[in-house]
Image (cartoon, rainbow, N blue to C red; front, side, top):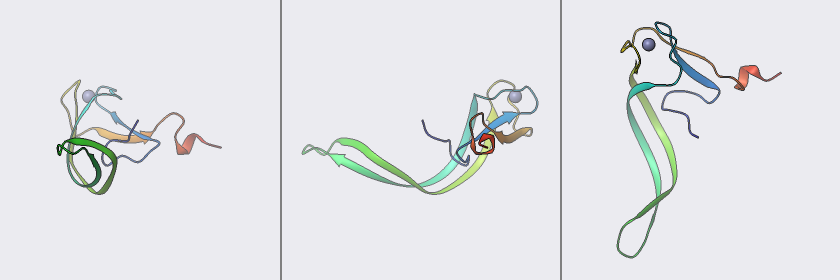
Length: 83
Ligand SMILES: [Zn+2]
């Protein structure tokens, strides 16, 4: 699994309006370096991806449609849960 843009590992979003923890629309601008593994036809797959720069424009709750009550909270098993 990967972390969504703008969210550090061990953190998660929470909608303070309705309690949603798992469904969000995220608008972001990202500068990304990808290692493209191509075959001789020119098509291929991405073997590795590194986000060089991320700007999050908005995070919107899919349940209630709100974007002004989104908070960042520790995730279970995240860094702050460790002893
Ligand atoms: Zn909500």
